[in-house]
Length: 190
Image 1 (tube, rainbow, N blue to C red):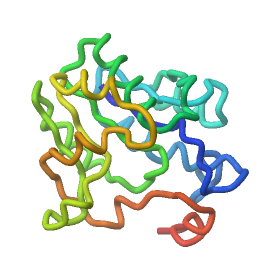
Image 2 (image 1 turned 135 degrees about the vertical axis):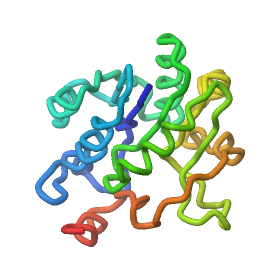
Image 3 (image 1 turned 60 degrees about the vertical axis):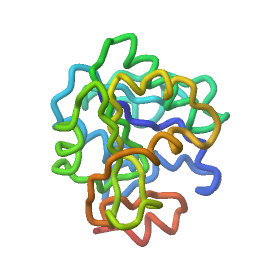
Image 4 (image 1 turned 180 degrees about the horizontal axis):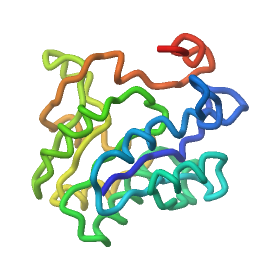
């Protein structure tokens, strides 16, 4: 199962909806879903704060169902927990979690993560295998980790679990995320 987390409050971005902002002519929230759409999966979900988000039509076109997180304002952990609950209900072997504000993660990297799918799988992305502090999404969790993910809350998300993950390296520019409007300007036409 693939889960794209898109329910964040984007407080550092200001008052505008971050995922609706354009990056290279496409809404930011669609870059990751467009890439993930090329990855084989039985189930694709977007965890969003509303099923009426400006990206909703694009997410549906990319083969994603929208699951609304009513607790999104409590932090990313609630979205992780919801994704894990849905994966458990679907009896998925593994859950690949990606973030909608990371528009440059290449399909090749996502395929490497997905190829690690197994009941005990625990893999995270990194820009340097030498730096364990750089463990981050996208990440893959085998179903044996779903119980731990379901208990996630607050802003920590799956951070504690990811600290134990095996690492799959990708160039640092591919793991860039958008937090501020200036990030969009800096990364435009990349």
